[in-house]
Length: 570
Image (cartoon, rainbow, N blue to C red; front, side):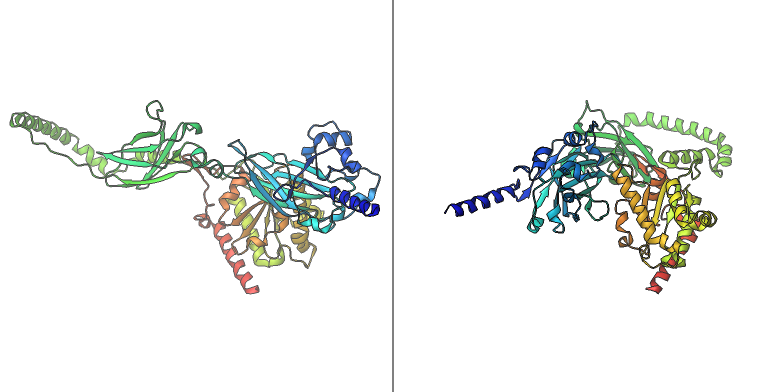
Protein backbone atom coordinates (compact mmCIF):
# COMPACT_ATOMS: atom_id res chain seq x y z
CA UNK A 1 0.00 0.00 0.00
CA UNK A 2 2.78 2.43 0.95
CA UNK A 3 4.48 1.60 -2.31
CA UNK A 4 1.35 2.54 -4.29
CA UNK A 5 1.04 5.80 -2.35
CA UNK A 6 4.66 6.58 -3.08
CA UNK A 7 4.15 5.95 -6.82
CA UNK A 8 1.10 8.26 -6.84
CA UNK A 9 3.10 10.98 -5.07
CA UNK A 10 5.87 10.69 -7.63
CA UNK A 11 3.37 10.97 -10.48
CA UNK A 12 1.78 13.98 -8.82
CA UNK A 13 5.15 15.71 -8.41
CA UNK A 14 6.12 15.00 -12.04
CA UNK A 15 2.83 16.43 -13.27
CA UNK A 16 3.34 19.52 -11.15
CA UNK A 17 6.84 19.99 -12.58
CA UNK A 18 5.47 20.03 -16.12
CA UNK A 19 2.74 22.54 -15.38
CA UNK A 20 2.96 25.87 -17.17
CA UNK A 21 1.29 29.22 -16.47
CA UNK A 22 -1.63 28.39 -18.78
CA UNK A 23 -4.59 30.77 -18.77
CA UNK A 24 -8.23 30.05 -19.55
CA UNK A 25 -7.61 30.35 -23.32
CA UNK A 26 -4.99 27.58 -23.32
CA UNK A 27 -1.98 29.82 -24.00
CA UNK A 28 1.29 29.87 -22.02
CA UNK A 29 2.42 33.28 -20.76
CA UNK A 30 5.80 34.22 -19.23
CA UNK A 31 6.47 34.28 -15.49
CA UNK A 32 8.54 36.48 -13.21
CA UNK A 33 11.49 34.43 -11.94
CA UNK A 34 15.23 34.73 -11.46
CA UNK A 35 18.23 33.24 -13.27
CA UNK A 36 19.09 31.26 -10.14
CA UNK A 37 15.61 29.72 -10.13
CA UNK A 38 16.08 28.69 -13.76
CA UNK A 39 19.54 27.22 -13.16
CA UNK A 40 18.46 25.26 -10.10
CA UNK A 41 15.34 23.97 -11.87
CA UNK A 42 12.94 24.89 -9.10
CA UNK A 43 9.15 24.62 -9.69
CA UNK A 44 7.46 27.82 -10.78
CA UNK A 45 10.26 28.69 -13.23
CA UNK A 46 8.95 26.84 -16.26
CA UNK A 47 8.68 29.79 -18.70
CA UNK A 48 10.46 32.89 -17.40
CA UNK A 49 10.99 36.38 -18.73
CA UNK A 50 14.63 37.48 -18.57
CA UNK A 51 15.20 41.18 -17.97
CA UNK A 52 18.23 43.31 -18.81
CA UNK A 53 19.14 43.36 -15.10
CA UNK A 54 19.31 39.57 -15.14
CA UNK A 55 21.59 39.65 -18.20
CA UNK A 56 23.85 42.28 -16.63
CA UNK A 57 24.12 40.29 -13.41
CA UNK A 58 25.02 36.99 -15.06
CA UNK A 59 27.35 38.36 -17.74
CA UNK A 60 28.90 41.05 -15.53
CA UNK A 61 27.84 43.92 -17.81
CA UNK A 62 26.94 47.47 -16.80
CA UNK A 63 25.06 48.74 -19.87
CA UNK A 64 21.40 49.48 -19.28
CA UNK A 65 20.44 48.76 -22.89
CA UNK A 66 22.05 45.35 -23.34
CA UNK A 67 18.76 43.58 -23.96
CA UNK A 68 17.92 46.10 -26.69
CA UNK A 69 20.86 44.93 -28.80
CA UNK A 70 18.88 41.81 -29.71
CA UNK A 71 21.84 39.43 -29.75
CA UNK A 72 21.09 35.72 -29.17
CA UNK A 73 22.54 35.35 -25.68
CA UNK A 74 25.09 32.61 -24.97
CA UNK A 75 23.16 29.62 -23.70
CA UNK A 76 25.98 28.30 -21.51
CA UNK A 77 26.45 31.50 -19.54
CA UNK A 78 22.74 31.91 -18.86
CA UNK A 79 21.90 28.31 -17.99
CA UNK A 80 25.20 27.29 -16.42
CA UNK A 81 28.18 25.51 -17.89
CA UNK A 82 28.01 22.34 -15.82
CA UNK A 83 26.60 20.40 -18.76
CA UNK A 84 27.83 21.86 -22.12
CA UNK A 85 25.70 19.45 -24.13
CA UNK A 86 22.55 21.23 -23.00
CA UNK A 87 23.24 24.03 -25.49
CA UNK A 88 24.63 22.07 -28.46
CA UNK A 89 21.58 20.41 -29.97
CA UNK A 90 19.56 21.29 -33.06
CA UNK A 91 16.28 23.15 -32.41
CA UNK A 92 14.13 24.09 -35.39
CA UNK A 93 12.34 27.41 -35.83
CA UNK A 94 8.98 28.06 -34.12
CA UNK A 95 5.82 27.85 -36.21
CA UNK A 96 2.52 29.74 -36.57
CA UNK A 97 3.85 33.18 -35.56
CA UNK A 98 0.91 35.55 -35.01
CA UNK A 99 0.59 39.21 -33.97
CA UNK A 100 -2.34 40.33 -31.79
CA UNK A 101 -3.28 43.95 -31.06
CA UNK A 102 -4.16 44.61 -27.41
CA UNK A 103 -5.95 47.68 -25.99
CA UNK A 104 -3.92 50.68 -24.84
CA UNK A 105 -4.76 54.26 -23.90
CA UNK A 106 -2.34 56.05 -26.26
CA UNK A 107 -4.26 57.16 -29.40
CA UNK A 108 -1.02 57.51 -31.40
CA UNK A 109 0.46 54.05 -30.91
CA UNK A 110 -0.38 50.35 -30.84
CA UNK A 111 0.53 47.60 -28.40
CA UNK A 112 0.97 44.06 -29.72
CA UNK A 113 1.52 40.60 -28.26
CA UNK A 114 3.27 37.89 -30.30
CA UNK A 115 2.21 34.24 -30.14
CA UNK A 116 3.81 31.11 -31.62
CA UNK A 117 4.13 27.35 -31.34
CA UNK A 118 7.41 25.46 -30.85
CA UNK A 119 8.51 23.05 -33.57
CA UNK A 120 8.39 19.38 -32.67
CA UNK A 121 11.87 18.88 -34.20
CA UNK A 122 14.42 19.19 -31.42
CA UNK A 123 11.80 20.20 -28.86
CA UNK A 124 13.42 18.01 -26.19
CA UNK A 125 16.48 20.28 -26.29
CA UNK A 126 14.56 23.58 -26.42
CA UNK A 127 15.78 26.03 -23.77
CA UNK A 128 13.61 29.08 -24.57
CA UNK A 129 12.76 31.76 -27.13
CA UNK A 130 13.87 35.23 -28.13
CA UNK A 131 11.35 37.61 -29.75
CA UNK A 132 12.65 40.61 -31.73
CA UNK A 133 10.58 43.57 -32.94
CA UNK A 134 12.37 45.38 -35.81
CA UNK A 135 10.88 48.51 -37.47
CA UNK A 136 11.49 48.52 -41.23
CA UNK A 137 12.29 52.24 -41.13
CA UNK A 138 15.59 51.58 -39.36
CA UNK A 139 15.23 52.64 -35.70
CA UNK A 140 16.51 50.43 -32.87
CA UNK A 141 14.93 47.02 -32.37
CA UNK A 142 13.47 45.74 -29.10
CA UNK A 143 13.78 42.19 -27.77
CA UNK A 144 12.27 39.88 -25.20
CA UNK A 145 14.05 36.76 -23.91
CA UNK A 146 12.25 33.77 -22.31
CA UNK A 147 13.94 30.69 -20.84
CA UNK A 148 12.81 27.33 -19.44
CA UNK A 149 14.29 25.91 -16.24
CA UNK A 150 17.33 23.79 -17.02
CA UNK A 151 15.89 20.41 -15.99
CA UNK A 152 12.65 20.81 -17.97
CA UNK A 153 12.23 18.54 -20.99
CA UNK A 154 9.32 19.12 -23.38
CA UNK A 155 7.64 16.32 -25.26
CA UNK A 156 6.44 16.38 -28.87
CA UNK A 157 2.87 17.06 -27.66
CA UNK A 158 3.95 20.53 -26.49
CA UNK A 159 4.34 21.53 -30.15
CA UNK A 160 0.59 22.25 -30.06
CA UNK A 161 0.92 24.65 -27.12
CA UNK A 162 0.65 28.36 -27.87
CA UNK A 163 3.26 30.59 -26.23
CA UNK A 164 2.82 34.35 -25.88
CA UNK A 165 5.26 37.19 -25.39
CA UNK A 166 4.95 40.20 -23.14
CA UNK A 167 3.34 43.27 -24.77
CA UNK A 168 5.39 45.43 -27.13
CA UNK A 169 4.05 48.95 -26.44
CA UNK A 170 4.56 52.29 -28.16
CA UNK A 171 4.46 51.17 -31.81
CA UNK A 172 3.52 54.19 -33.96
CA UNK A 173 0.33 53.80 -35.98
CA UNK A 174 0.70 52.93 -39.66
CA UNK A 175 4.27 51.63 -39.21
CA UNK A 176 5.80 48.49 -40.74
CA UNK A 177 7.55 45.95 -38.53
CA UNK A 178 9.27 42.60 -38.84
CA UNK A 179 8.72 40.26 -35.88
CA UNK A 180 11.21 37.41 -35.43
CA UNK A 181 10.85 34.49 -33.01
CA UNK A 182 13.96 32.35 -32.64
CA UNK A 183 14.53 29.16 -30.70
CA UNK A 184 17.21 29.04 -27.97
CA UNK A 185 19.92 27.73 -28.05
CA UNK A 186 21.23 29.24 -31.28
CA UNK A 187 24.29 27.21 -32.44
CA UNK A 188 26.20 29.01 -35.18
CA UNK A 189 26.54 26.03 -37.49
CA UNK A 190 22.78 25.55 -37.88
CA UNK A 191 20.27 27.61 -39.84
CA UNK A 192 16.50 27.99 -39.86
CA UNK A 193 16.34 28.54 -36.10
CA UNK A 194 13.99 31.55 -36.40
CA UNK A 195 10.66 32.51 -37.99
CA UNK A 196 9.86 36.04 -39.19
CA UNK A 197 6.63 37.80 -40.00
CA UNK A 198 6.05 41.30 -41.38
CA UNK A 199 3.04 43.24 -40.14
CA UNK A 200 1.71 46.79 -40.09
CA UNK A 201 0.26 48.52 -37.08
CA UNK A 202 -3.28 49.77 -37.39
CA UNK A 203 -4.15 53.08 -38.95
CA UNK A 204 -5.50 55.87 -36.80
CA UNK A 205 -8.95 55.36 -38.30
CA UNK A 206 -8.91 51.63 -37.52
CA UNK A 207 -7.94 52.21 -33.90
CA UNK A 208 -9.56 55.50 -32.90
CA UNK A 209 -12.33 56.03 -35.42
CA UNK A 210 -12.42 58.28 -38.45
CA UNK A 211 -13.36 61.52 -36.67
CA UNK A 212 -10.41 61.29 -34.25
CA UNK A 213 -7.59 61.10 -36.81
CA UNK A 214 -5.80 64.07 -38.30
CA UNK A 215 -4.34 62.34 -41.37
CA UNK A 216 -7.53 60.42 -42.19
CA UNK A 217 -10.01 63.21 -41.50
CA UNK A 218 -11.53 65.13 -44.40
CA UNK A 219 -14.55 67.44 -44.79
CA UNK A 220 -17.48 65.09 -45.19
CA UNK A 221 -20.20 67.67 -45.89
CA UNK A 222 -19.56 70.31 -48.57
CA UNK A 223 -22.30 72.69 -49.80
CA UNK A 224 -21.98 75.06 -52.78
CA UNK A 225 -24.13 78.16 -53.41
CA UNK A 226 -23.87 80.74 -56.20
CA UNK A 227 -24.59 84.46 -55.91
CA UNK A 228 -23.89 86.21 -59.16
CA UNK A 229 -20.45 84.99 -60.23
CA UNK A 230 -19.33 84.35 -56.65
CA UNK A 231 -19.39 80.77 -55.32
CA UNK A 232 -19.83 80.30 -51.57
CA UNK A 233 -18.53 76.97 -50.22
CA UNK A 234 -19.55 75.73 -46.76
CA UNK A 235 -17.89 72.69 -45.17
CA UNK A 236 -17.67 71.05 -41.76
CA UNK A 237 -14.58 71.72 -39.64
CA UNK A 238 -12.42 69.09 -37.99
CA UNK A 239 -12.85 68.45 -34.25
CA UNK A 240 -10.81 70.84 -32.12
CA UNK A 241 -9.00 67.90 -30.54
CA UNK A 242 -7.17 67.21 -33.85
CA UNK A 243 -5.48 70.61 -33.81
CA UNK A 244 -6.20 71.38 -37.47
CA UNK A 245 -6.08 75.16 -37.92
CA UNK A 246 -6.00 75.73 -41.69
CA UNK A 247 -7.40 74.10 -44.82
CA UNK A 248 -6.92 74.47 -48.56
CA UNK A 249 -8.85 73.97 -51.76
CA UNK A 250 -7.64 73.38 -55.33
CA UNK A 251 -10.04 74.13 -58.21
CA UNK A 252 -9.43 73.38 -61.88
CA UNK A 253 -11.27 74.40 -65.04
CA UNK A 254 -10.29 75.07 -68.66
CA UNK A 255 -6.70 74.00 -67.99
CA UNK A 256 -6.18 76.47 -65.12
CA UNK A 257 -5.69 75.57 -61.45
CA UNK A 258 -6.35 77.85 -58.47
CA UNK A 259 -5.06 77.20 -54.94
CA UNK A 260 -6.85 78.86 -51.99
CA UNK A 261 -5.75 78.63 -48.36
CA UNK A 262 -8.52 78.79 -45.76
CA UNK A 263 -8.12 79.95 -42.14
CA UNK A 264 -11.45 79.65 -40.29
CA UNK A 265 -12.34 81.90 -37.37
CA UNK A 266 -13.26 79.43 -34.63
CA UNK A 267 -14.63 82.21 -32.40
CA UNK A 268 -17.52 82.64 -34.88
CA UNK A 269 -18.30 78.99 -35.60
CA UNK A 270 -16.57 75.81 -34.38
CA UNK A 271 -18.41 73.31 -36.56
CA UNK A 272 -18.72 74.87 -40.04
CA UNK A 273 -16.99 77.52 -42.15
CA UNK A 274 -17.91 79.35 -45.36
CA UNK A 275 -15.54 80.96 -47.85
CA UNK A 276 -15.91 82.53 -51.31
CA UNK A 277 -14.41 81.64 -54.67
CA UNK A 278 -14.16 84.67 -56.96
CA UNK A 279 -12.97 85.49 -60.47
CA UNK A 280 -14.62 82.36 -61.87
CA UNK A 281 -15.56 81.91 -65.51
CA UNK A 282 -19.29 81.80 -66.21
CA UNK A 283 -20.52 78.61 -67.84
CA UNK A 284 -17.42 76.63 -66.81
CA UNK A 285 -17.43 73.32 -64.94
CA UNK A 286 -15.06 73.31 -61.96
CA UNK A 287 -13.53 70.30 -60.21
CA UNK A 288 -12.31 71.07 -56.70
CA UNK A 289 -10.62 69.29 -53.80
CA UNK A 290 -10.73 70.46 -50.21
CA UNK A 291 -8.68 69.07 -47.31
CA UNK A 292 -6.92 69.91 -44.07
CA UNK A 293 -3.60 71.67 -44.56
CA UNK A 294 -1.65 68.64 -43.35
CA UNK A 295 0.86 66.36 -45.08
CA UNK A 296 -0.85 63.48 -46.94
CA UNK A 297 -4.30 64.65 -45.80
CA UNK A 298 -7.31 62.93 -47.38
CA UNK A 299 -9.08 65.21 -49.87
CA UNK A 300 -12.80 65.68 -50.49
CA UNK A 301 -13.78 66.04 -54.16
CA UNK A 302 -16.67 68.27 -55.22
CA UNK A 303 -17.80 69.77 -58.53
CA UNK A 304 -19.96 72.69 -59.58
CA UNK A 305 -20.86 74.75 -62.65
CA UNK A 306 -20.78 78.55 -62.64
CA UNK A 307 -24.12 79.48 -64.11
CA UNK A 308 -24.66 82.69 -66.07
CA UNK A 309 -25.78 85.47 -63.74
CA UNK A 310 -29.35 86.64 -64.24
CA UNK A 311 -30.45 90.28 -64.09
CA UNK A 312 -33.79 90.80 -62.33
CA UNK A 313 -35.78 93.88 -63.39
CA UNK A 314 -38.12 95.68 -61.04
CA UNK A 315 -40.75 98.04 -62.53
CA UNK A 316 -39.84 101.57 -61.34
CA UNK A 317 -42.28 104.40 -60.80
CA UNK A 318 -42.64 107.02 -63.50
CA UNK A 319 -41.22 109.73 -61.23
CA UNK A 320 -37.87 107.88 -61.16
CA UNK A 321 -37.81 106.77 -64.78
CA UNK A 322 -36.95 110.14 -66.39
CA UNK A 323 -33.83 110.90 -64.24
CA UNK A 324 -32.58 107.37 -64.79
CA UNK A 325 -32.96 107.68 -68.54
CA UNK A 326 -31.06 110.99 -68.58
CA UNK A 327 -28.24 109.49 -66.52
CA UNK A 328 -28.09 106.49 -68.85
CA UNK A 329 -27.84 108.73 -71.94
CA UNK A 330 -25.05 110.78 -70.35
CA UNK A 331 -23.11 107.68 -69.43
CA UNK A 332 -23.55 106.30 -72.93
CA UNK A 333 -22.17 109.50 -74.53
CA UNK A 334 -19.12 109.50 -72.22
CA UNK A 335 -18.40 105.86 -72.91
CA UNK A 336 -18.75 106.40 -76.66
CA UNK A 337 -16.16 109.18 -76.61
CA UNK A 338 -13.74 107.09 -74.57
CA UNK A 339 -14.20 104.08 -76.81
CA UNK A 340 -13.68 106.21 -79.93
CA UNK A 341 -10.39 107.62 -78.67
CA UNK A 342 -9.06 104.22 -77.65
CA UNK A 343 -10.26 102.47 -80.80
CA UNK A 344 -6.88 102.49 -82.53
CA UNK A 345 -5.00 101.28 -79.49
CA UNK A 346 -7.46 98.44 -79.03
CA UNK A 347 -7.17 97.40 -82.66
CA UNK A 348 -3.40 97.17 -82.32
CA UNK A 349 -3.58 95.05 -79.18
CA UNK A 350 -6.49 92.83 -80.14
CA UNK A 351 -4.38 90.48 -82.30
CA UNK A 352 -1.37 90.27 -79.96
CA UNK A 353 -1.29 87.74 -77.13
CA UNK A 354 -0.36 89.36 -73.85
CA UNK A 355 3.04 88.07 -72.80
CA UNK A 356 2.53 89.27 -69.24
CA UNK A 357 -0.67 87.24 -68.89
CA UNK A 358 1.09 84.13 -70.19
CA UNK A 359 3.94 84.63 -67.74
CA UNK A 360 1.49 85.12 -64.89
CA UNK A 361 -0.23 81.85 -65.77
CA UNK A 362 3.11 80.06 -65.77
CA UNK A 363 3.99 81.49 -62.34
CA UNK A 364 0.66 80.33 -60.92
CA UNK A 365 1.21 76.89 -62.36
CA UNK A 366 4.62 76.71 -60.73
CA UNK A 367 3.00 77.60 -57.44
CA UNK A 368 1.04 74.35 -57.74
CA UNK A 369 3.68 72.15 -59.35
CA UNK A 370 7.20 71.95 -57.94
CA UNK A 371 9.51 70.86 -60.74
CA UNK A 372 12.56 69.02 -59.42
CA UNK A 373 15.74 69.38 -61.43
CA UNK A 374 17.05 66.20 -62.99
CA UNK A 375 20.66 67.29 -62.40
CA UNK A 376 22.15 66.54 -59.01
CA UNK A 377 25.57 67.59 -57.66
CA UNK A 378 25.95 64.40 -55.62
CA UNK A 379 23.81 61.74 -57.32
CA UNK A 380 23.12 58.59 -55.29
CA UNK A 381 25.23 55.58 -56.26
CA UNK A 382 23.10 52.60 -57.26
CA UNK A 383 24.31 49.04 -57.81
CA UNK A 384 21.98 47.03 -60.08
CA UNK A 385 22.10 43.24 -59.65
CA UNK A 386 20.38 40.74 -61.92
CA UNK A 387 20.52 37.21 -63.31
CA UNK A 388 21.74 36.33 -66.77
CA UNK A 389 19.94 32.97 -66.61
CA UNK A 390 16.87 34.52 -68.29
CA UNK A 391 18.63 35.16 -71.57
CA UNK A 392 20.17 38.10 -73.45
CA UNK A 393 16.83 39.89 -73.85
CA UNK A 394 16.46 40.18 -70.07
CA UNK A 395 20.07 41.37 -69.74
CA UNK A 396 19.39 43.99 -72.43
CA UNK A 397 16.33 45.22 -70.49
CA UNK A 398 18.48 45.60 -67.36
CA UNK A 399 21.12 47.53 -69.30
CA UNK A 400 18.47 49.85 -70.82
CA UNK A 401 17.04 50.43 -67.32
CA UNK A 402 20.47 51.47 -66.05
CA UNK A 403 20.92 53.88 -68.97
CA UNK A 404 17.47 55.39 -68.39
CA UNK A 405 18.03 55.85 -64.63
CA UNK A 406 21.41 57.45 -65.18
CA UNK A 407 20.04 59.88 -67.76
CA UNK A 408 16.64 60.85 -66.29
CA UNK A 409 16.67 59.88 -62.60
CA UNK A 410 19.85 61.73 -61.49
CA UNK A 411 21.45 58.47 -60.37
CA UNK A 412 24.99 57.13 -60.76
CA UNK A 413 24.42 53.53 -61.86
CA UNK A 414 26.96 50.75 -61.32
CA UNK A 415 26.47 47.72 -63.60
CA UNK A 416 28.82 44.82 -64.24
CA UNK A 417 28.22 45.18 -68.00
CA UNK A 418 29.85 48.63 -67.84
CA UNK A 419 32.77 47.71 -65.58
CA UNK A 420 34.22 44.56 -67.14
CA UNK A 421 37.84 45.78 -66.92
CA UNK A 422 37.79 46.37 -63.17
CA UNK A 423 35.86 43.13 -62.69
CA UNK A 424 38.61 41.25 -64.52
CA UNK A 425 41.24 42.89 -62.29
CA UNK A 426 39.50 42.36 -58.96
CA UNK A 427 37.61 39.13 -59.63
CA UNK A 428 33.83 38.78 -59.84
CA UNK A 429 33.18 38.12 -56.16
CA UNK A 430 35.47 40.86 -54.83
CA UNK A 431 34.13 43.35 -57.39
CA UNK A 432 30.57 42.66 -56.29
CA UNK A 433 31.38 42.96 -52.57
CA UNK A 434 33.30 46.22 -53.07
CA UNK A 435 30.58 47.80 -55.18
CA UNK A 436 27.89 46.77 -52.65
CA UNK A 437 29.81 48.50 -49.86
CA UNK A 438 30.49 51.65 -51.91
CA UNK A 439 26.93 52.07 -53.22
CA UNK A 440 24.25 54.10 -51.49
CA UNK A 441 21.56 51.73 -52.78
CA UNK A 442 21.40 48.16 -54.11
CA UNK A 443 18.61 47.23 -56.55
CA UNK A 444 18.01 43.54 -57.33
CA UNK A 445 16.11 42.88 -60.57
CA UNK A 446 14.20 39.68 -59.77
CA UNK A 447 13.14 37.17 -62.41
CA UNK A 448 12.45 33.46 -62.75
CA UNK A 449 16.10 32.63 -63.32
CA UNK A 450 17.41 34.62 -60.35
CA UNK A 451 17.75 31.61 -58.04
CA UNK A 452 17.97 28.96 -60.75
CA UNK A 453 20.97 26.71 -60.21
CA UNK A 454 23.38 25.52 -62.85
CA UNK A 455 24.92 28.72 -64.21
CA UNK A 456 27.44 28.21 -66.99
CA UNK A 457 30.10 30.48 -65.48
CA UNK A 458 31.16 32.16 -62.25
CA UNK A 459 29.34 35.30 -63.31
CA UNK A 460 26.11 33.35 -63.85
CA UNK A 461 26.45 31.82 -60.39
CA UNK A 462 27.17 35.19 -58.79
CA UNK A 463 24.27 36.75 -60.64
CA UNK A 464 21.87 34.33 -59.06
CA UNK A 465 22.32 32.09 -56.02
CA UNK A 466 25.49 33.57 -54.50
CA UNK A 467 24.42 37.15 -55.15
CA UNK A 468 21.08 36.64 -53.41
CA UNK A 469 22.80 34.95 -50.45
CA UNK A 470 25.25 37.82 -49.99
CA UNK A 471 22.58 40.49 -50.18
CA UNK A 472 20.29 38.48 -47.91
CA UNK A 473 23.09 38.24 -45.36
CA UNK A 474 23.64 42.01 -45.53
CA UNK A 475 19.92 42.64 -45.05
CA UNK A 476 19.84 40.28 -42.07
CA UNK A 477 22.93 41.94 -40.56
CA UNK A 478 21.42 45.41 -41.02
CA UNK A 479 18.20 44.23 -39.40
CA UNK A 480 20.06 42.76 -36.42
CA UNK A 481 22.09 45.97 -35.94
CA UNK A 482 18.97 48.14 -36.10
CA UNK A 483 20.16 49.93 -39.24
CA UNK A 484 17.98 51.36 -42.00
CA UNK A 485 16.94 48.75 -44.58
CA UNK A 486 16.11 51.29 -47.30
CA UNK A 487 19.50 50.73 -48.96
CA UNK A 488 18.30 47.40 -50.37
CA UNK A 489 15.47 47.18 -52.92
CA UNK A 490 13.91 44.55 -55.14
CA UNK A 491 12.17 45.14 -58.47
CA UNK A 492 10.48 43.11 -61.17
CA UNK A 493 9.67 43.95 -64.76
CA UNK A 494 6.12 43.69 -66.05
CA UNK A 495 6.67 40.13 -67.25
CA UNK A 496 7.78 38.85 -63.82
CA UNK A 497 5.74 38.04 -60.72
CA UNK A 498 5.96 38.73 -56.99
CA UNK A 499 6.81 35.06 -56.47
CA UNK A 500 10.10 35.63 -58.35
CA UNK A 501 11.39 37.73 -55.42
CA UNK A 502 13.53 35.45 -53.18
CA UNK A 503 12.55 35.00 -49.55
CA UNK A 504 15.94 36.44 -48.53
CA UNK A 505 14.67 39.81 -49.80
CA UNK A 506 11.36 39.64 -47.98
CA UNK A 507 12.14 42.68 -45.79
CA UNK A 508 13.22 45.12 -48.52
CA UNK A 509 11.14 47.57 -50.55
CA UNK A 510 9.58 46.16 -53.73
CA UNK A 511 8.80 47.87 -57.03
CA UNK A 512 7.19 46.91 -60.34
CA UNK A 513 8.84 48.57 -63.33
CA UNK A 514 8.05 50.70 -65.15
CA UNK A 515 4.87 51.56 -63.23
CA UNK A 516 6.76 52.44 -60.02
CA UNK A 517 9.55 54.60 -61.45
CA UNK A 518 8.31 57.63 -59.50
CA UNK A 519 8.27 55.67 -56.23
CA UNK A 520 11.78 54.38 -56.94
CA UNK A 521 12.96 57.94 -57.61
CA UNK A 522 11.37 59.04 -54.32
CA UNK A 523 13.38 56.46 -52.36
CA UNK A 524 16.65 57.16 -54.17
CA UNK A 525 16.46 60.92 -53.51
CA UNK A 526 14.47 60.87 -50.24
CA UNK A 527 11.81 63.30 -51.51
CA UNK A 528 8.07 63.38 -50.90
CA UNK A 529 5.97 63.12 -54.04
CA UNK A 530 2.98 64.95 -52.53
CA UNK A 531 2.55 67.76 -50.02
CA UNK A 532 -0.60 69.83 -49.36
CA UNK A 533 -1.40 71.80 -52.47
CA UNK A 534 1.76 70.77 -54.32
CA UNK A 535 3.31 67.77 -55.96
CA UNK A 536 6.72 66.87 -57.33
CA UNK A 537 6.97 66.53 -61.08
CA UNK A 538 9.97 64.82 -62.66
CA UNK A 539 10.03 64.93 -66.43
CA UNK A 540 10.17 61.66 -68.40
CA UNK A 541 9.66 59.41 -65.34
CA UNK A 542 5.90 59.05 -64.90
CA UNK A 543 4.22 56.04 -66.47
CA UNK A 544 2.45 58.31 -68.97
CA UNK A 545 5.50 60.11 -70.40
CA UNK A 546 8.59 58.02 -69.64
CA UNK A 547 8.51 56.60 -73.19
CA UNK A 548 8.68 60.11 -74.72
CA UNK A 549 12.48 60.20 -74.34
CA UNK A 550 14.75 58.06 -76.56
CA UNK A 551 16.13 56.12 -73.60
CA UNK A 552 12.59 55.59 -72.29
CA UNK A 553 11.45 54.20 -75.64
CA UNK A 554 14.50 51.95 -75.73
CA UNK A 555 13.67 50.67 -72.23
CA UNK A 556 10.05 50.04 -73.21
CA UNK A 557 11.09 48.13 -76.33
CA UNK A 558 13.66 46.08 -74.40
CA UNK A 559 11.07 45.05 -71.81
CA UNK A 560 8.65 44.10 -74.58
CA UNK A 561 11.33 42.03 -76.36
CA UNK A 562 12.27 40.28 -73.13
CA UNK A 563 8.64 39.47 -72.40
CA UNK A 564 8.25 37.88 -75.85
CA UNK A 565 11.45 35.89 -75.35
CA UNK A 566 10.22 34.66 -71.97
CA UNK A 567 6.93 33.47 -73.48
CA UNK A 568 8.68 31.70 -76.36
CA UNK A 569 11.13 29.91 -74.03
CA UNK A 570 8.30 28.70 -71.78
